[in-house]
Image (cartoon, rainbow, N blue to C red):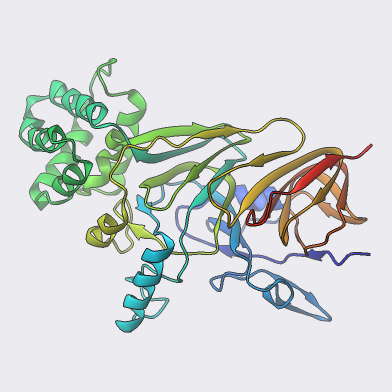
Length: 385
């Protein structure tokens, strides 16, 4: 019989999380505090545990360092606008902050490890996010719509339009964040005070609603107009998208499974009370238009393919399946009850599958997500009669 290990995972109680989504999914009692993330992996920030004799030990003691980190993520309030580094940028940034003597718990610490951090997000409920710069002409159209609401905003907007006319998103971004305190506050006041009759003129009701929400929470932050320059996307359950390193994004609301390299490197650019360093952020951003591709899963078994070889997410469901994973795998049951080679796991339970050349047999009425490395090959999954 193969060794299959039930995981005991740690939570992150960030203020943007939900008090009910993760506890409800796991079938545990809510404490009333926000449950933002549950980590499944070996990252030193919150390593999963397994039973070793009569005590809990680190998963790493059995698995070694996993190249990926899988999470449950529950977003009730928008996350900071942010981006993540490439491998080379992470190595350089980590070494620089180590030399500065910044501890890993220092709020000004951006680089917690030496890994890149591309991400895959798969929705369990409708999940709204902003991701990737829009085309300059689309941004210009929305900015001009602001002027049509009131000419009072023209002086600020004209400076941004002039930057966009050069075709440089870099110049536009730096111009926005170099506004004076007075200009930043005027921008927020304008959004909060106006009640425009939204028409199809480059500005949607959803964009305005988000900007108003951002201006209420983060008055004077130039990122309150991020819905104008970032793509707004809503995933339906089962849909996923991949965000490469260097792509500006922010999760707005929803519940999902997130898979990334084993990293906690974050460079923030606003909409947060946490440390923001625009200079460090702009150093890693790709200032090109980018619309993330939405992947929709088929029924039964399905793999969400990305350019990243450090991880791959597969969804497995139905009355039976056999799977050979190319590397170690971490699984979480999203519905029903599954028997994994005779070991029973219920919805919300997660487990670790050590690499084995022989297939793991899943049976029952269930669905689950399996995270593994795609470095060698993708999982081989077949139906079981």
